[in-house]
Length: 302
Image 1 (tube, rainbow, N blue to C red):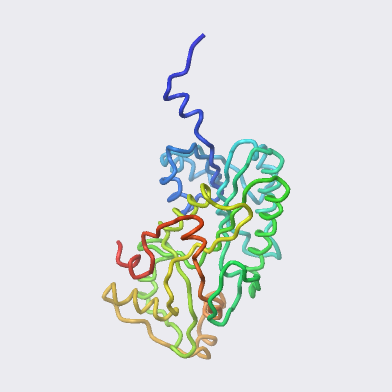
Image 2 (image 1 turned 90 degrees about the vertical axis):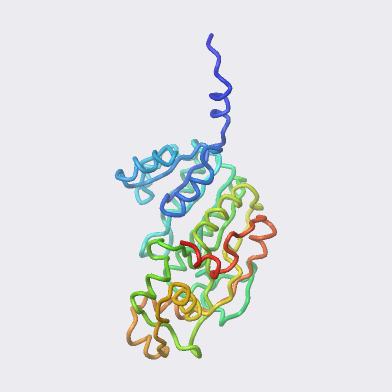
């Protein structure tokens, strides 16, 4: 009878992590946890299979919009990092519902981290708030996230798995598609005049990936955590800072009335919500030391 080598036995004992929605943040997480975890990466795009393999993951081809493709997903992993967004329309999040139903059928998952959004709070009028603040979503997009959070809580209660909901603000990083403020500044897009401006919250993409890993290891059962840095800036100040650090002209300022007449609804919605988030749980419960404690440090990189 043959015996396994120590290296083979060690690989076999590695916990298995399933990453659902392996985009930019999922790939950053993958680089952090490989090879200590065996990583499965769920994707609906066959074109991504080779890249995920190259990063050290075992890709799984399935589609959250087609629940029949999820099969025995729940029997494959010890922990799940759910990064997939809800659909772009509708009153709820059928993707999360389908995923959690599949995980529940398998009965193996003991840890789940869900990436939600701080948009679930709606407009707080610039108030400081912690995770005990009740959600008050003002957009359909945020209401879909609240629905997903309800399903995550259901999964935790019904399965006994430890669940953590990370409420995430604006994600940025130099060079990140859609998340590099210097690119917006370079395009010359306007921001609100100081008297109309709103507080925004941020997290560097690398710190968010590290927050996901910390939540997998140290998240308390059925807990919400703000995954944000300690910046306290209004939106215009944020883009002014990005411009100054990049040596670009500061963006023009417009009144709220002008913004309502000129800007698309999706962008305007972000300019209509003002809040300042407390990150005490991130720092003290998850014990995460942020590499970029404010956007000033983060925007100096790259």
